[in-house]
Length: 274
Image 1: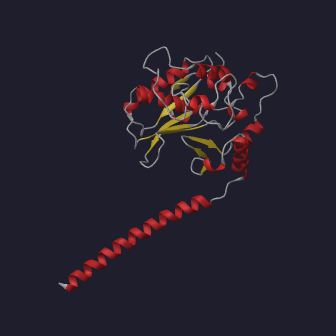
Image 2: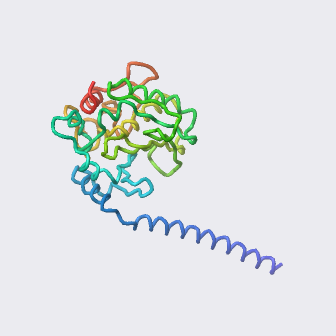
Image 3: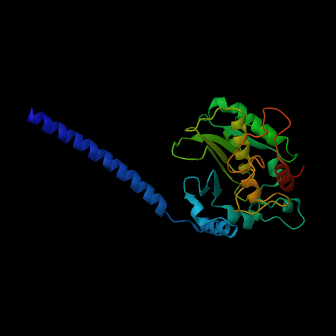
């Protein structure tokens, strides 16, 4: 009997040791991720974002997606270098569309045919809300047009998922990289209860907005679009813009007219025209 108990205790101790080793390995992997050095390209972008009013502590390096994670957005490491290489010329139609970090955003000609591809992981019950989100952006300006493609290699935006029950973010999107193209991906957190209704549509409109280069209306980093109310206004007005960091359904419906606020329309006209 003692021998049996002794063997059992050794077995349990071995399991605990293995679990401990696995946890240590995961912790070490996290430490290695944190210790990974930023490239010159990423460092230049980090310094640029700090100049634009972002706080370094809020810009978390995401080496897998090659960008700085800031809430529900990822800002590409390549941003500053691309802005330097692709700065629009004086008087060009592209000059007006510079709001993105007061630098280089998505040009008109790159936005008239934005193709998105839905990955197999994306919940089918959310596709209806996604199609409406794309529709509302498409009718917002003659220079914005979203359409679905079934050819992954031809897509401008890949729509996928991730799962993390510990994260606050319900969705996340990449911002443009400063080279004239839209942000290359959007993902929803399937650990959250996405109902697929109009509230989900508003969330996806918000994320598409990030793909187009828009930041949060209620946050100070990145500057303010001329003619719009400032962040303090949007902090106290839940329906002041669909780009508020906390997204509210407000006037968004599976129908027309669209639920754009006055500031939303000003922002769209400023960057993309009527």
